[in-house]
Image (cartoon, rainbow, N blue to C red; front, side, top):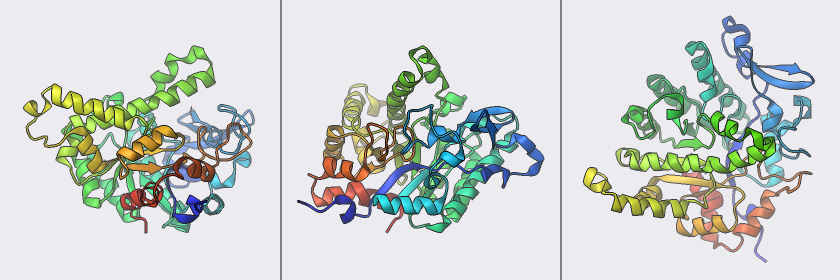
Length: 388
């Protein structure tokens, strides 16, 4: 029997989240903002993130790995959350236990695309909160900067400030840029608009890929649409269909000419799965040819599938047959993740069905050649994020 994949390769987990500890913003944002700054309050025995008197979320709802229960019934307080979710040294210990060499880190409190901060009454406070998070992240990963890979968040509502934050993030050692996957949901131009070109250009100059995490847009309407189904049924429905939002996001990059205008920039569809990729690209290629795209845009010199192959990546964490099919078609564009420690993450624990990342990888990817398995578990991500 072949040796364990996690023993043979330095596995890079390209989508994890850190549960922000209580002092992220209160320790770094100017005191003049008072309680308008995101902070933790204990309400009826539960820790809650509050800003400007409004409830944002609970740390327990994004810290479900190993918890014997289902969202929204997560750990009530920080005392009930495993330290590996908010403490960097404990995270490294956890990674060693699981056999994972490196993890790419995404936020929670500000939203997966930093969109929550737009709700703040004061734009200066929103901007300061984004900068504070990026500075915190730099400090957090300092215990193992080669293994904990930070992703810079942006005040995407301000292009000039976003460009500055990209260069600031590069100076801090951030490995990628996190961007809102549906800016039109906030009344801003679509991704294909040239309005965003300075951001893509700055990322290209810094050699940093652009990440589009599912749920990075305004998803409130999607949750509201199924509220009568029950919380868990609705959560499962929305969590499944968020993949489609990233499918639209990738289409914007190609049909909007972003890939053509910025051939040196890589883009990553995060937590979106990969099973849809071959079918979606086949459809896009068909429509590209049959709708006269090149007649309208003679500068577009490649098909969507070719743009994808050149500069777009997607991540998987639970698929089996769908992942293998996508890997077969696009072995250089598929990345492995666990989504630790989110409600539907891949992680062992008392909850059923619990999934052990090591067992999953061996069962799902064990039949791949060494060359391809090495790409999926390490090589593709190492090239993107600059990991040795």
